[in-house]
Length: 164
Image 1 (tube, rainbow, N blue to C red):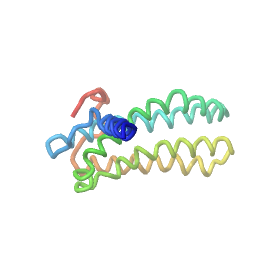
Image 2: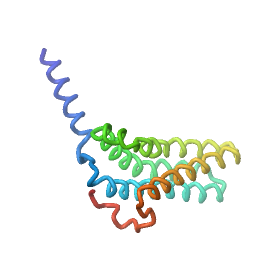
Image 3: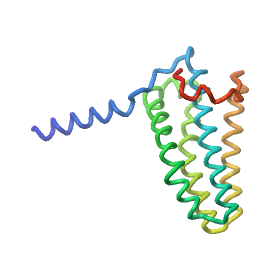
Image 4: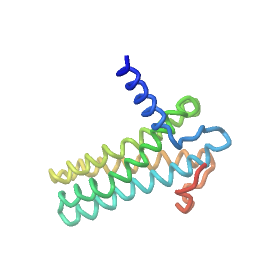
């Protein structure tokens, strides 16, 4: 019985920790949230692409692995956790407003990173082009979302630490 109580306490603590800092989204704060998301997504995607190009040009897939694992991935994981938390508490609102796809795009960045590594390791330029094209397609979708909502995607990233 005591073990079951301890297990329940741990589960509840983990569940509440998963949504720490996430805020309820509404029509009043969704545009500010999207601004923040765009800053984070663009930063992560561009950092990944720039790091990849740097190590591709140097012919060093091991250098790219080090960059990805030690620099890009830890920061990406923190940002992804934030968006996983947002999705967790706002799933209905996001689904009702057709915005769940942005979370898939953010999560897919780690798959693009893996594809870029494998393509670089195997010197497969076709796979490299496909992975970079996925980044461009996702950026195009994000740009279209901002156009449709009459938001400016080109605002400076100075608001990256703001809360919506």
